[in-house]
Length: 394
Image (spheres, rainbow, N blue to C red):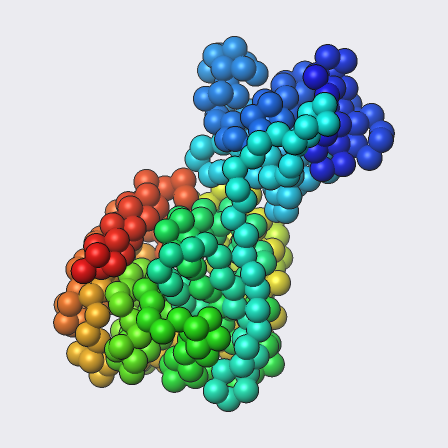
């Protein structure tokens, strides 16, 4: 059988792979993986299936599987960052991300989720980039320190999260001012300006009321938004957040912590192999794979300059929503990692204690960024989905 996909042709009878008309040599195991992908018509090829078909059920290491996937990507002109031809579904397997034709017929494939990126302006004129995807009740993923609407969509760290959040909702996202596709040269990064940014995106999206999913620094922003505009927020899930920034809750120690992080940013931002980069990445996601780490590093340079990232981190350290907690009227699910090295667990407990209508979920991990391969990721996603479903049915 002859299959056509991207600029490639796979002839299973003659055991040949052509790319852009040129023959590409591939090892038998890599060829078998490509055959499984094209025969699957875009369906997931699980790791169990790979072991059964490529290794005939023999016990093999995760490294061996990853090696064959990398070789398959190289053969078709793809790589682990773009994943434009072969996409990883973390913890499960891989699938083709392009259309396949066979003998002139188009193979049936599941519908591909897509996003639309648009631009708007905040109250002070700052340009903001926002995106929407999925269908259903509106869900705002609040903007945070490190994001890029296009790269998030391809990221092995963030794409699984976006797929889950967008499965039952019209998902709205935006790059925070000073980062990503939003305007970079900005001043006045405060809780108030960030609240105005969220409002500008909600208004541009014609979202009169919506759910909020917030992480880390976007948690105090979401609290301030819900306090100011109670009629617009239906419910919130707040993960890894805080009431007081590091510079507020303990001026001496907090400022030292902030400056340490700022120096890691300045010395290692976007530099693979840097000891500073390794320290910074380990702080945020100690369980990351090499693919996820590469994506994290790529995101840094695309999202902000070292100076911009440092300035934003200093501003976040001064956030304080102590006087807004009692004003929040919507139901809230507070989630926090028990050994979070970025935002203290005590801050999560305080949120749950002082918000009027809050539930609390503690996750047994040290990771600030919960990764899809962690059991805690599924706990977070399941709890989030169940909570929003319950709130939608009220």
